[in-house]
Figure 1 (tube, one colour):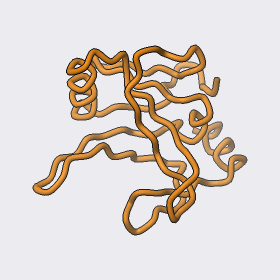
Figure 2 (tube, one colour):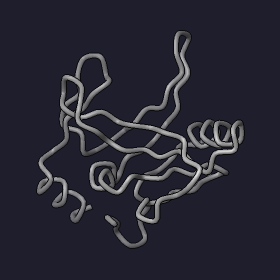
Figure 3 (cartoon, helix red, strand yellow):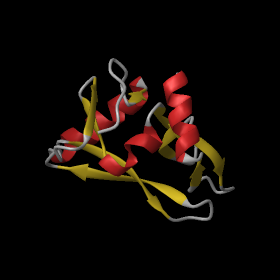
Figure 4 (cartoon, helix red, strand yellow):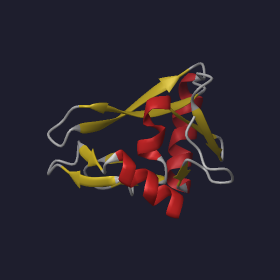
Amino acid sequence: MFSIPGKQAVTITPRAAAQIAKLMAADGHKGLRIGVKKGGCAGMEYTMEYVNEQDPNDEAVEQDGARVLIAPMAQMFLFGTEIDYETSLLESSFKFNNPNVTEACGCGESIKFADPEEMAEHLVKG
């Protein structure tokens, strides 16, 4: 779907790759699909789900035993995102460092993206 030749859609930190691989192995899943949906106070939310079959339109990124599948409708919004996994005293969670986000709500659960035309210009300029 949406891609730039020679450039991965997203990058995965070693911590995130280890956690994704661990989650995949625990239940025999084929990957972790990420996407976006409307919702939250800023307008959009990330989605994550285990998958046992890859949709032919998913963009696949594989690293160190981890497979992340990007849903077709989310590819433009997630291009250039770094997926990390952080552990603190109170919580552990995946973090999305996304250059396409222009705003995030105070609770950190929802985001707002740049105008699609602005995102396309940013991606072309690199």
